[in-house]
Image 1: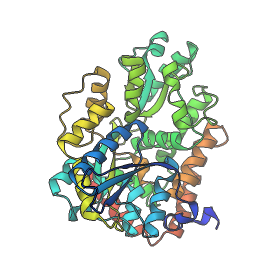
Image 2: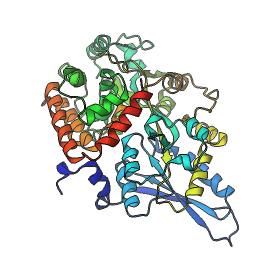
Image 3: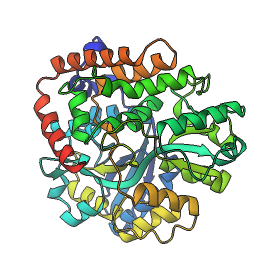
Image 4: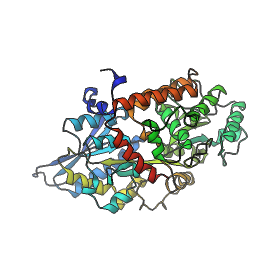
Length: 450
């Protein structure tokens, strides 16, 4: 099968051909009578920070202790298999009982395929609301995930490097012109102003999320772009690539950006090899543990006049119940336990990171830099993570290709807009049956992200 002709629905339904992926399975034994016939609850998870396994193990152990005769088997999924591994199992009728789910279309199309149950059937409305899974977990009034932890997306910089370049590290630039001035000062001082690792595509996704968002007034406009209701050939919608092109031509990015993967490169900001990079909040506790308050954070510099520009961007990771689970009631009890005060407090005590749940009291945050992260991106008014609304075909054939080509100097921003429009039209031809679902979802996202 030609992957260029593979629709997202076909991609999901045919995922069995891709195998079950990699991961690490651990079983937490039940603490009940050895004479009881055990029920094994299967919990598949992934996290931006692998160290969050301590929390997974803690919740699993407490659940097993509370449910005599029940064990919880956890599987840490590989990032490359989060979608395919679940969809393969769901299509075969052998999904886990609790599944980690990225937000937006990453799980919503599994909803449309009938692979996930609405949680409203299992959990009280206040538990669902307080879990803070966001509006991108809701379709036609039904919620399909509970929140786990927040995922702020931001510019991270090394304050020591900025100080050496004569910049005010405590007051980062807010506008594009000021940002370009800071990059020039950093370059003049002998530093690489900006960059990361784009070999695996995720840097391009993060860049698009931080920058294209500024051209939009609400999240529904983003879905409209990705499904062809709006036109990427309008300069407003490819200008964000022009800003990357501008930085490439000025020599502000690291020369090896195309040969390094995302998470290998983010640590270069700690050593000063990069003055500034893109990162997610869940990784920052590890960085703060190494260089303390020299970790700097900033919202993406504003270049456009869209209503979503200039706001912090954050999403939420979460869990749902597959429709094929044979233990849905127990799965719902496990999800409820993840939202209990004890589990919320354990998230902080075991990981030094925050739960997403709105009822958690952040007063234990005793580090000023972590407090800045919480107050500025988690407890603040945020806008949505745009890239979780793009169809898979747009990710692979449009965003990823354009980011690589522009970084290599082989494509202009205007050409990227033309390329995007072409890919969108191909996607529409392959997925005309899904357009109504996208339109309904876009309307609800627009209403929630005004």
